[in-house]
Image (cartoon, rainbow, N blue to C red; front, side, top):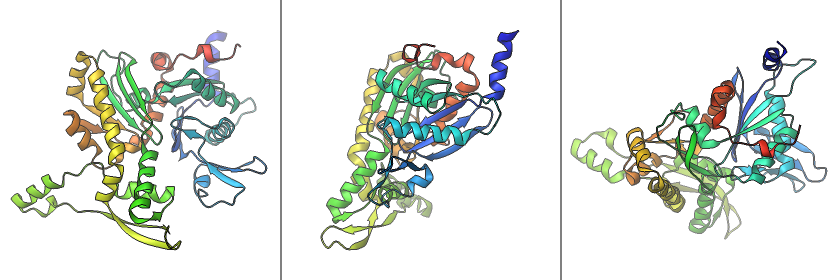
Length: 371
């Protein structure tokens, strides 16, 4: 009788969570409540005292605007922990903010955390240790593309191939999934952050203008373009004479400091220039997808040709990316609905159905301290 009572007791008094600690954004899902937090993975630290001044949205506002003794840092790099102490503080902040129930005997929550494909044992241990130090009772790990596949309701436990590409801030995760496991997984350190770096470098070389990360990100979101089917659309317009088929080109007013004069300057940049700026990185992503297809077993390729390639993660919203991948791979490509939260939604589904979906979690028994 006691054994049956304990799970119900813990479910009532503990608020178990799924957390996607992304390079760019962190998303928190609470059991029974859904997604409760979506904030940037940024922490503002006072270097003199070591005190955490702000986390998330408040800290992001400080990026590039702080005095010398205050730094706004992103403790996650390429999907893994780069600063353990700051990550622990950020972890603790999100757990405390997400908790709603307040009891005298409040139980610590169990937490499922998404990690990139192929993380090392040291990186796994760092995530588990940070979670435990931040107040988690137990920490489970799940690979991000697996979580995404579950989040978009693909049949991951069936003998059927599913191809998922998760484009985040720090990494692009590519995985072929079947029978509850990853048959083929790749993690490429070219993603949203690299595209922003490409834009900053292009603007500096082309216009001798120095812009910050936030401006580069705004340009990427505003007029970012991976592939232009301009010629095709123009032919349609010439044939049909329909105004809707005409290509409307976008541009963006960017502001920065002129490196020659040292004075502020505003310049208009076009989407074609941004496409050229990020072309090399986009090509790397596409080539990695093509290599994964080449290495996939033939039986699973047949499934993927029928079902298509699923794009998720914030980077999948780059205009024209799905068209480019479809053109290069000759397979249907689908950008999922609400791609930024697919990982945490999948991890949340595992949390809600832990007994049925436990096999999709990464085995971590050897990493946990003896009880």
